[in-house]
Amino acid sequence: MKAAVFHGLGKPLAIETVPDPICGPGDVLMRINYCGICGSDLHATQEGVFVVPDGTILGHEVAAEVVEVGRDAKGLFKIGQRVTTVPINACPNCSRTCRLGLGIHCPSNQITGFGIPGAYAEYLRADANHVLALPNEVSDENAAMVEPLAVGFHAVDRSGLKAGANVLVLGAGPIGLSTALFAYFAGARRVVVSELAPDRRKRALKFGATHVIDPGMGEVKDQFAEIAGGPPDIIFECVGVKGLIQHCINMLPPFGKAVVVGVCMQPDTIVPISGILKEAALQFVLGYSKRDFEVVIDFLAAGRIDPKPMLTEVVDFAKLPAAFEALRKPTQQCKVMLKPH
Ligand SMILES: [Zn+2]
Ligand SMILES: [Zn+2]
Image (cartoon, rainbow, N blue to C red):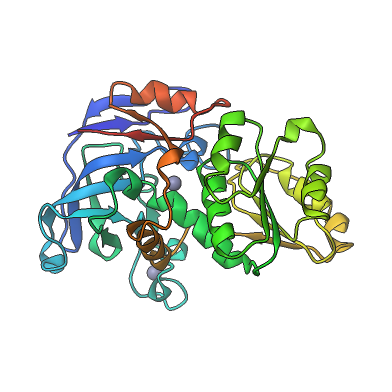
């Protein structure tokens, strides 16, 4: 099959013919309809603490259809059925993680598209335990956005956001938008999204933002106070750039909370006393559970959310390497997807 393969830092993805994936007894083999490019794919292929090995096929934001069902998974899925997959390959048994649907924390977990071959390819094998059927109401394009939406849902769920809270979201990429959207659903009084790019700011207003601000136009803290009459109760850091955690702490009121959703892979420093003096809470979140995926699929099927404005470009294999590299620089793009067939 055709796939896009990573061959080291500074090199564009190479479009190659690789062996077809094999459907194991507990697996589902699927034909990829769309695969989204994720910020973490970009992070994992540039200088940082985690770089995927030479030969990696990235891709974990999947809309697909079933072409083969393994022996032990027979009856769970039909050939031709439309599916997505939680990009998790874990044991099913750890009591603290897997049995709670949190295989992302399983010590034996390997994430699809990082540890094991992903969906920048014509076909993908996935663990049947983590494959989810798609209702007819959920389009293929929207299905490929379930994963980033689930990140936002999970971040808001984990944050303990209370109805009526004033919320600041830093960044209006796919994760910032998803977070703003579910903060809105959680009953936030104001959802203020801070973003440099004008197109992204405009888009945030379709994703639950009640207000948008341009951090280039003055202190975010002051702009927020002007809108909300005071500081944010919760800040979601959805950019993942060095220095932003300290920036969040500086903006928090006493007992405020900063939730780190953006993935920064560089060492960063904070001044602990700045958080101590406020008894601020600093929380990190990772990914999602299978249930988070199911909730998002329900939201999509019921038409309660429409992530379509997030999708700004669809590319084929020929255009993928350049589109992937272009996302490393500040861009007006939001979600770019590969359509491999
Ligand atoms: Zn992703
Ligand atoms: Zn486990």
